[in-house]
Image (tube, rainbow, N blue to C red; front, side, top):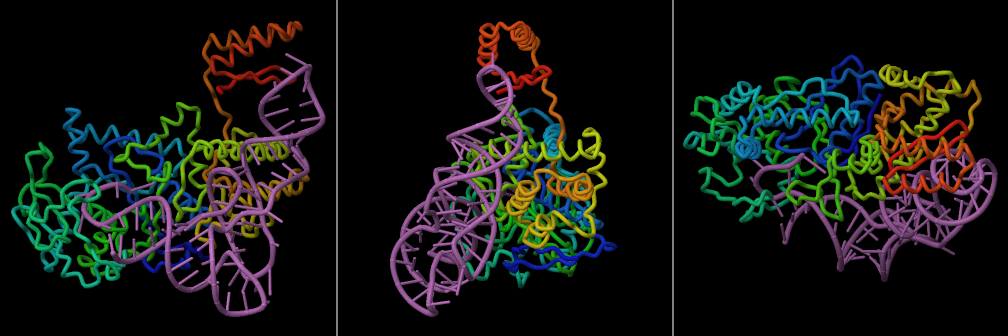
Length: 473
RNA sequence: GGCACGGUAGCCAAGUGGUAAGGCAGGAGUCUGCAAAACUCUUAUACGUCGGUUCGAUUCCGACCCGUGCCUCCA
């Protein structure tokens, strides 16, 4: 069994051989919990989720680690501004993040370590680097010495580029070479000496009180929870340099084994042609979209409607398209269930047990696009709609063979058709009931007026033979 | 300045050395008191520009234009 995926380091698609008995080790750089995650952040986690789902369908023994960064400049600042302890602050945002993950139907990682819970591992890693001459201490901080790492830059192809020293870094903070007294400006902090702004956030270390650097945590956590070489390490494209480059440098210098076989980087989500970011303030969250009646499932669909390596432009037209497309998939699923007398409510349970049938009769192209064509979700969705178009009606025998394949499709995409429960305010309910009475008694004029009144209040009435239902506009 | 990525119908978005999936929107119909939803059918001569290779290029090569990302703690 093989999976074809583009590898950032080699800049080409490579086959990943899957061996069901062997643990498949994958690590995804998780969120820094200092505010609401936006849907651009979630693009990364959704793509990673599709990958993990595919592996599970193939019965691969996946060990999936995704971290929580709960100590850095932004979390410390946020906690201070809210008069909270760092832990109170980050716990709140972690819960919010988990809530979003659940709504997006993201499978929970096997392990989700927090940076603050693995300080010992990080200190051990730093000590190892110190012992082997890869790091040096200056005034209570410890820095990684890039000049000691011969192949530094191999992921982002630094040897082919010139590093320009800018006055400002991407966080718009001064790149002050003297600030941390580094030997070279490119050296990065493994351990940061305590500063008054850090408040009560500090741990003891052989080099004095302080806190870990950003890159250190990921290397320490991968080593602790996954051991040696990872099969796939993923993250947003912006992490290629310096974060992932530094992770490689630390890990390989310390443990003397290759860090990662395959690097997976997910392109950014854009708004009006610019990347969605907290810095630019152009972000959408699951909550802000739900206020406009867009379900998280719709957002999820919109995020996989484009190929992960290509920037995806976020628009409401796109979201509407996703919603309509998703409804078609729901409707097809419902028909299939009805035909086979499967209780729609049982679908989540059935999906949990979904596996990829050995011989695909109907949806081979769908899985080929995902497995053999670099996780090509838009192509796969195209195949799915072509299938539905070609088979609007199935015989009972056909439906029986389609069903397991269909379940695998839903599982892979993380689509969970459910009947939406919408809470309807009492006054709306009352108006709708009144309209129904008018309609039944033949007073169409009054009925239409009431329909209009409901429309003005933001609700649509949909009649059918037996009755009516109401939904928000 | 360096390194990358992208430019396919109104909007998204696949893909291919031999004239281009799919979704949305648009149009028509069935249904309906009317609508909506659903279903069926359907439209458009869409591959950034200019050269080159080729029998043939949207696809390969080169140049250019436009847009975007990264270049020291951003997913």
